[in-house]
Length: 259
Image 1 (tube, rainbow, N blue to C red):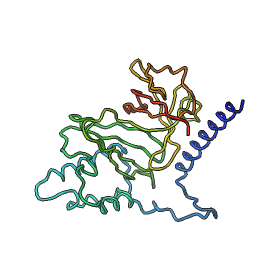
Image 2: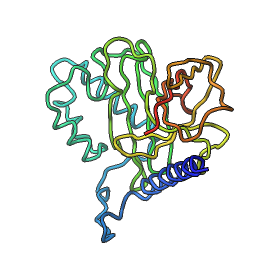
Image 3: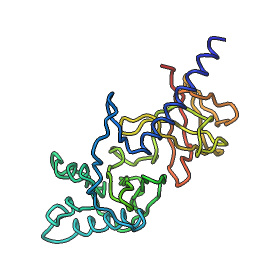
Image 4: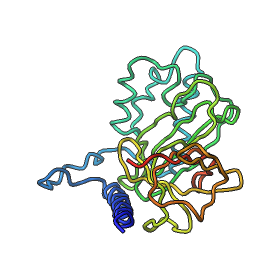
C-alpha cells in the first residue's frame, strides 16, 4: 500500500510541476521573488515581425548562411549578430562567443548546407520552436530556433545547436525524463508522454509514438519490443528517437533506476 501511495504522490508531483512550469512560461514570469514585485517588462522595446514565425526563422538562417558564403565578410561583420529581431539575450550570446566554434553558432554545421528543411517542434501563443537541418546531412548538426511572441508579433528568442558528437548522430531526440500518461490539457492522454528538463527547467512534455521497431530496454539490459499497455507511469527513462512535428517516434526506451 505504501508503494502504491508513494507512486501516486510521485505522479501528482510531476503533473503539478509540469502544469506549474507551463503556466509560469505562459505568463512570462512577470512576478519574481518572495515579495511578488512586478518587474518592468523586458520585452517592451523588443522589435518583432508579424510574419509567420517559421518564415522569420528561415529568413534569418538564410541571411546568415549567405553571409558565411560571401567573399570578404562574415555574419558578424555584416551586422547579423545585432539583428533587431534577435532578443537581447541572443545578441549577447553571439557577441560573447569564446572563440569561433568549429560548428557555426547559427547553422550548427562545419560545412555549408546546400539544401535545408525545417520542422516546427511545438507551437504556443507565446513561443514556438523550429528545427532546421541539412537535407544532405540530416543528423550532422541541427539548429534549434526558439521564437518568442511579444508586442503583437514574433522575435528570435534563442538559437542553439543540437548536442555535438563525433561521427554520425543516430537520433534527433535524446533526453532523460519520466513516463507520463495522465497529462493535463491540451496534451492528449491517449498517448504516452515524456516529461523532461530543458535548459535546466523541468516540466516540458513531448508525445511519444511507438511502432514495431520501438525497443524497450529493462534496467538489467534485456531488450524487447515495447508494449504500450505495460509501461509503468512516472518511471525514469532515457528516450531516444526521431523528432517529428507531432512528437517523438520512439526508437529506444531505456529504463533507469529510481532515484
